[in-house]
Length: 213
Ligand SMILES: [Zn+2]
Image (cartoon, rainbow, N blue to C red; front, side, top):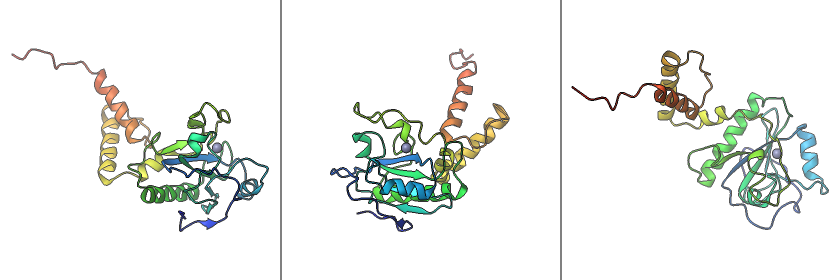
């Protein structure tokens, strides 16, 4: 049993789970496409074949419906459902997460990271969107756009940085603004900036093979 201390406990129906334990390798972000009341209402309907671990309201309240050790039905296939923890976010397509949702979401993921012994937070390793995992099995519920671009991943990744990585990020931003592209986005992730710098460096003439006199 793993319970998030800051969550409001709002248990979902006992039946909506696999018997297999959840391997808890990462988190899947979802867009609830509705209000928090509607979302919890759907969870509690036995006829609706869906369940997930946490729901985050626009006010930043975190509701926990199942222990993280339980395998719920949110990711679209057995493999993803038995490996990943599902988080729903109140609101719908076109609505960015509220600041309160982002802060609560980051805090929740940090707790999971610590509790479950994840290494560094990384997209595609322990941070996923629903649309990235539904096809882990051939037998699946079909494609989805969820969470429809609502997750500001840069915020999650920057928050999770070490002091050293943050210093490097700021240095890279300064370097790129002065020497590569003055209009570089200030919310670029470390990976994106490194890629940009890489392209710049590779675009320069190669002097390394020149004969020295
Ligand atoms: Zn989803």
